[in-house]
Length: 555
Image 1 (cartoon, rainbow, N blue to C red):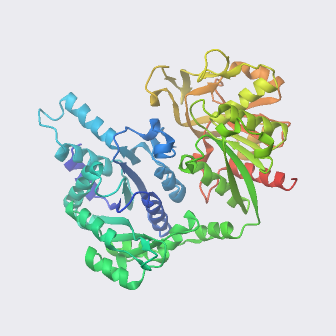
Image 2 (tube, rainbow, N blue to C red):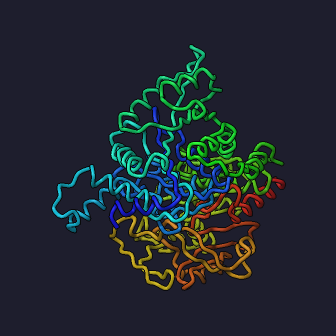
Image 3 (spheres, one colour):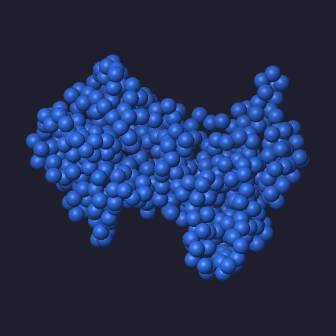
C-alpha cells in the first residue's frame, strides 16, 4: 500500500492525531505528559493509542547502556523500546506493540533495504521524500478504531536528529488537514529567584524555532515550579500565537500519579476536545487517580525494601521496578521506601550492616559481571535471616547459584556468561519452543538476536506459593535475557530446599524458583515489573510488599 493510499484510508476513519514535542531543555517529561493526557481522554470515553518516535540512530535501546538511556522497556511482542512506553502502559493500560516504537535507525534501515531491493526504481534517495515518507508510514500504520493517536517526538526542538520527524508531521498536517492534527509543545518556564519571576523568553524562542519548521503549536504545556501569573500566560499566548486558554501550566507534582488530575484541572483535556470540535464527550472521571494519590498521601505505614543493583546511581534504569514497588504499596495501603544499595560496593562491605534495616530484599536484572558477588551476598543474607526476597531475571539466576554454592556445597557454581571454568548452573540456551514453534539462537549472533524477548507462557506447580499468589496455574510474562538456569540441576536444588515451581510449557526452561521453608523467597526469570500498573498492581509485588510489611512488624 502506498503512502497516499494509507493516508486516504486514515481519512476515512475518525482517528485524530496529537503530536507532542519538547523545547528549551530535555527531560521535561513529554512521555509522562503524553501518558497523562491519554489517561484523561480515556476517562472521558475515548479510545487511545500512544507512540514514540526516537531520533537516535540505534535500531533500538536494547544495546545502549542504562546510564545513557535508562530502562529498556519490553513489550509482549518482544520489542525493546524507550522507557516512555512503560509510562504509556502504566497510565493507559493499553499494551504497547512493535508498531508503537520507532527510531531513526529503524527508519534508515527500512529506506536502505528498499533501495537495495530496487523499490525506488532508481531514484536518488533523499531525506525528503523517502525518509519522511517512512516516518509518516509508521505514524499512520496499524490503526483500527482509535479516537486519538498520541505521538511523542523524542529529543528537543532544534536538535539536528529530530528535523526529519518535524518535517514528516508538518507534511501529515498538510495532507490530512489541520482539523485532524493537533500540536502540543512541552516547554519550560525557568524561575529566576533574584528577579522573583518566571521567564517566558526561552519558550518564545523554542516556539519560534518550531515555527521555522512550519509547525504552529496549538497548545503550550509549560513546566513550572510556581503558579504561572495570568500576565505571563497572556504574554505567551500573544507572542507564541496560541489561544490563551490553550496555555496550560504543568506545576511540579509530588507524585507522577497526581499529573493526570492536575492536567485535567488546568483544562487540558477540555481544550483538546474544544480544538477538535468535540462537544458531546462525557466529563473526565478521575476517581481511580484520586484514590491512588490519596493512598500515597495518607498511607497506613511505611515499609523499607532494599534493592541491590548495579545501576543505582541512575534510578531511571529501574523505572518500572520502582513503580511496581509503589503499586505493591498502594495495594497494601502502605508507602514503600526504597533503599538503593550498590551491589559492587556491597562486595567489600558488611551485609549485616547494610541490610539489617530493610524489611525486604529485591535483586533486579542486569548484564555483566560487575557487582555479581554483592548480589549473591545479599541473597545469602535474605535466605539465612528469613528476610522476604524477590529475585528478578539475573537476580533469580544469582539466587540459584547462591543455593548451589552455599547449600549444595558446589563452590564453583556459576554462569557461562562470565566464565567457562565453572559448574555451568546458568548457561546460554540456543533452542526452545514458543507457541509450538522452535526458536533458535546463535551464540555469536547480534546481541538482541540472542535474547529471549517478549511474552512467554509459564506453567506453575499446583502446590506452589506463586500459584496461590497468581490464583492460576498458567501465566504469561515478559522476558529479556540470554542465559537460563539449566534444568539438569533440578535434583540438586530439590535436595537443597529450592524448588523449580514454574517452567516453560515444554518443561525445558525454569521460570520460577521458591524456597518453601522460607517465609517468602521467590526468584523469577521474567520481568513482572513491566506489566504492573497503579490501578492493576502485579500480584507478585503485592504479595512481596505484604510479606515485607509483615516482616517489618517482627523487627
